Amino acid sequence: MTQQVVLVTGASSGFGRLTVEALARRGHTVFAALRDIGGRNEKAAAELRAMAGAESLDLRVVELDVTDQASADRAVGAVVEAAGRLDVVVNNAGLIFPGPVEAFTAEEAQRQFDVNVLGALRVSRAALPQLRRQGHGALIQVGSISSRVTIPYSGLYAASKAALGSLTEAWRHELAPFGVEAAIVDAAPYPTSIGANAVMPVDAGRFQAYGEGFGRFVGELTGRQTHDPGDPQDVADAIVGLVETPDGERPLRTVVAPAAQYDAVVALNDRAAETARLVAADMGVTAFLAG
Ligand SMILES: NC(=O)c1ccc[n+]([C@@H]2O[C@H](COP(=O)([O-])OP(=O)(O)OC[C@H]3O[C@@H](n4cnc5c(N)ncnc54)[C@H](OP(=O)(O)O)[C@@H]3O)[C@@H](O)[C@H]2O)c1
Image 1 (cartoon, helix red, strand yellow):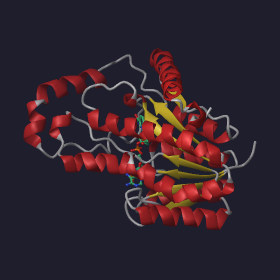
Image 2: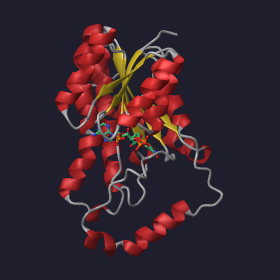
Image 3: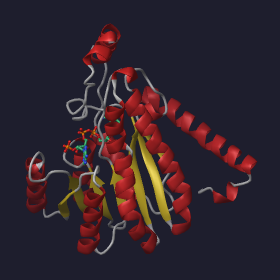
Image 4: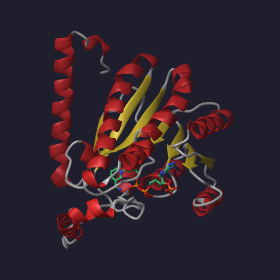
């Protein structure tokens, strides 16, 4: 297995944190990208550095706020200066604005997209010149099955993840001639800090108009006594698996979900890929598709 130089955004908690720890323990050179290292993420940065020291891991912390292009440029520049190359970018940073679509202002929707969609665009824009120069590399996005099947009260989030999926598909085709790959993980809900970090709508009046339905929805979701919440490590392991997959062999979509959902979402993805090939053939542009 080739040791990879990997940059992971949103590495302070959840999937990102588990991913950087797992990658570093497997011997990769890992740059854990956190925003606000001197403030809100001081403790997480210190813990990662302590872990690197205690276990002699090549795990370094780098400042990166995905809502700031200059921050993304600086982070990628620091990685390339320190490691001499960058093999894989994991666009993981994200958050959720849960609630009925109508309750959110356009400004709140912009913030949802600013992190989940434009964040990945900024980091990829910073990294791609280096990846294209190298003639190899990968962009791995952390998406959601809610981009494939949208349930109520997650409309903004699902729309942002659907946009991320579309960008990934376009990158996959456009970057293939440069030897650069794009892939996305369609993850089911897992217990991370995403709930605690959720941003609720400020327009209380609009929100309350849906109060009873939203309340019942949350009650149903959280009240399932027999429901196994799943292990977020499964998502981190899937990302590690993609990092370690040889160039040219990474699948476009990797589904990580409970068994009951897994087969159905994989079948949906397969059907979508087949449909994309048919549409491209009908448009006479099959030659421009990645394999
Ligand atoms: N958990 C799920 O159910 C689930 C399912 C499917 C997909 N996902 C996706 O998985 C990814 C990771 O989420 P998670 O579940 O692990 O939640 P999490 O524990 O809340 O982690 C989110 C990470 O994103 C970071 N982040 C937020 N805004 C940022 C910004 N402007 N710049 C840089 N980093 C920023 C957070 O940093 P701070 O600590 O500074 O806020 C945190 O490190 C997200 O893209 C999420 O949408 C989650």
